[in-house]
Image (cartoon, rainbow, N blue to C red; front, side):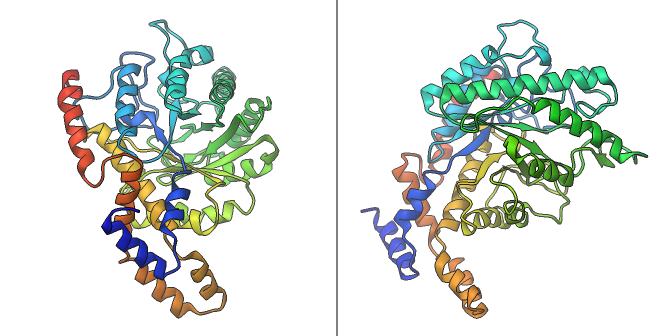
Length: 421
C-alpha cells in the first residue's frame, strides 16, 4: 500500500486500464547516463586552464564548480542521492587522472580512469565514455579526424582508437556495456567549395578507428551528428545524413547513431526521428538537451518535446533499444541542482509515458477511431501523474517534491561555498 494520495491516483489510472505499480517497476529498470561535464563547465582535468575552445561554451559563473576529480565525484554522489533509480555516468576522455603528469590525447590509457572505475564499482554504476576531439592545439583549425593534414588526422585517429580500448576496458571491469560516443567539431565557418572531400576523409578515419572488434556485451560505438556549431556555422562534416548512413552501413561493427536534441534545426525534433532510424538500426543513443534558439544546452525541463521523446520511446516499445544520456551544461545556476532538475525531469517524462493506456490508444488508432484517440490523449493531461511520481520517489528513498532543494542548499553551504567562485 502507498500513501492515501497515491492510492487515489492508482484507482484513477486503473479506471483507464493502467497499472501504476507496473509502470513504476518498469521505470526502475531504465538507467539515465548523467554527463560529467555539467559539474565543471566542460573544463576537464588535463590542465589548470580547463576548456580552451573547440566549439563548446558554458556560460555563467555560479560559484562552487568542481576543481578536481574528487570534488566532481562528490558532487555526482550528491546528485545521484536525489535522483530516483540506479543510473550511469557519461565520462569524457579529458576527465582523466594523471597524478600531475602531462598526458596528451594519444597517450591516454585505462589506468588514467582507474579511480573513476573504482568509484563506479562501489556505487554500482555503469560508465559511458567519449573521445575528446576539442580543446586541443591540434584542433585549432577546426578539424580533427576529417583533417586534410595527415599528421593531424592520424593523431586524432590514434586518440579515437585508444578511447575505444578504454571504453572496452571499462565495460569489462564493471560488467556493464560501455558506449563510447564520438563527436567531432570538424567543419567550416563559411561556405566550402568541396563538401565531399572531408566526408571521404572522415569515412576513412572511422573505418580505421573501428577496425578492432569488441564484444557488444562490454562495448558499443556511437557517432553523433550535428547541424552546425560555433565556428562551423556553414558546414559540419559529421552531418545527420552522414552518420545515419555510416551507422546503418556498419551495424555489424555495432556502431550506433546518437541523436542530440540540440543538434538539429530549431524546427526539427528528435522525437520524430526515433522510430525512423530504429527501422534500420538495432539500438540508438540519445543526448537529451534543451536548445533555446540554438544549440545552447539548457537544463532539461518537462517540456512538450521531452514528453514527446519519452512517449515515442514507450509507445514504440523501444525502452530496451534506446540508451538515454543527458547533455547540458549551465554555469549560471547550482550545478548539482542542474543535474537533479534535468535528470528528474527526464525520468518523470518516462513515467508519464508509462502511465498511458497504450493498448487502448493503439486499438482506437488501428480501428480508425480518432475521436476516442484524441479524447483519451486529452484526458491523460489532467491525470494525477504527480502523485505517482511522489510515490516512486518515496519508494526509491529520495526526496519527494521540492524537499531535495534543502539538501542541495545544505551541500552548497557546507561544501560548494568553500570552493569560491
